Length: 84
Image 1 (cartoon, rainbow, N blue to C red):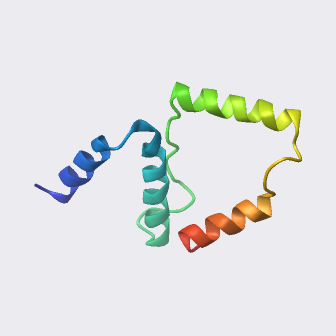
Image 2: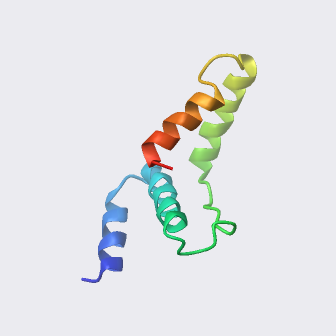
């Protein structure tokens, strides 16, 4: 089995909601190792379920924009998680 086949097989074993996380991590690796220009990453297509979740979250944000973490806190957490 080739590496590509193993990756695809393992991806199919994950639930759909984790696929975007895999794509994000792959984009990180590609950018980190300069495999493609960082200025032209492909945009993953959002599923209808993800779009609904984002719409609900946006409505909650509009109701009370001061609840939750600041961008600086989120940015710090992502930087630490992905060691950028």
